[in-house]
Image (cartoon, rainbow, N blue to C red; front, side):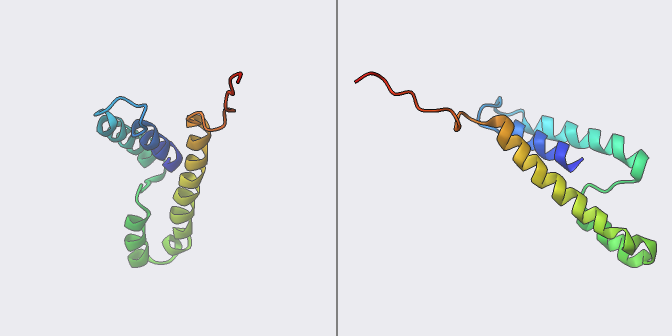
Length: 100
């Protein structure tokens, strides 16, 4: 879900995206993430908010806490590479040299 969320954030704030619509896209994406993932896994989009309850509950919650940190970090790294590849911005295109 972090991969999806970060891809939406990067796309909606890109310089080629329509100005002023980023908050709408980001807010709707976050809403969609919550609507999809809370019923399935009781997800927390913010790993820091999962740490406090896990510390107080202890036991199995502590042993599973690593996943609430590793998965979003991995998703964010993958989204960064994916968006860089998708956006491209013409940086990999060869320069056209005219006749001189």
